[in-house]
Length: 285
Ligand code: BV8
Ligand code: ZN
Image (cartoon, rainbow, N blue to C red; front, side, top):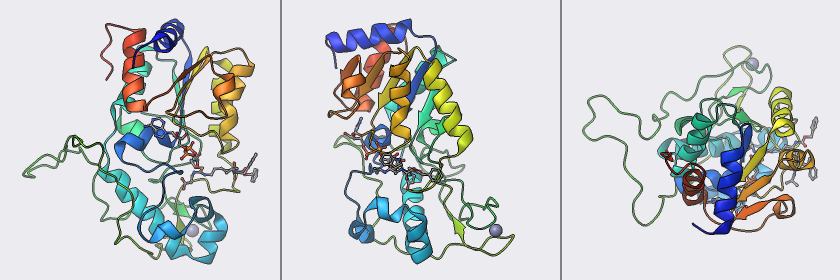
């Protein structure tokens, strides 16, 4: 990606001191993690994610919902951070006051070099009891994240993405319903540590996100359709308080109107180019 938009966005980033990077599912698309808009696969293609990601669905069929999250967890473990994740880490390395806010429940920001993103919608890797909220262990047979050196293993697991684009790490056909484990404390079913539709966001994370957006001097919104609330209001808070907003998304979204610059392209290509436009000497990660 080149052109006046990229140059302008690079100028805004180079001038920033307290940027916010706000991400959605598109950030992980090039890592093979399906977005919410992408069609589901296998058993789950019959279900709308927004129906499965609800307390009602878990009450009605805990094994179906737990199985779905287990399949997504395994998919993320097979995935690798993409150059977009590493570029976000490069921005934070260059500007330590950068706050990364994500709607994603995968751990690719952390594995891509951002140690503590503000998680608005929880994580696939923080199960807890559905009754007493006691943290629960991850399934013992969960493979380590791709890229993790396995001592003594024949070949490193760090396979580079094949030329034909990222391998999809969507749930696999054989993935299916799975009875959730019982809480070690009270015996109730363990649930995924994510925010379901109809549930309140963790107040500490939401407060930190609103505060960062209100105090930022640039907000970069990456790979979100901005349809899920209250998360979608974060870029609006920044714009209302006069910060320029730069959007990275291959297609228009409801945020277009508040953006100073719209960069139409995939995060894995645009973000490294943006870092180079801001800091020509920088290693974009
Ligand atoms: C609540 C965790 C109340 C679970 C998620 C106001 C107006 C309208 C509705 C509401 C409203 N306020 C509340 C609501 C209801 C609801 C809501 O917003 N509904 C929507 C659908 C209309 N909100 C809630 O229920 C929230 N809770 O309101 O509680 C309350 C309050 C107090 C007390 C009690 C209760 C909770 C919402 C959180 C739900 N949980 N995730 C899980 O993951 O399983 S939301 C989930 O979906 C994601 O986390 C994310 O937030 C959202 C998906 O959006 P995106 O990330 O943007 O992804 P999407 O697939 O949509 O788009 C991808 C984009 O990437 C596209 O634009 C595409 O073009 C782009 N792209 C693709 N490839 C690339 C790319 N971009 C760059 N590079 C690429 N390569
Ligand atoms: Zn319990």
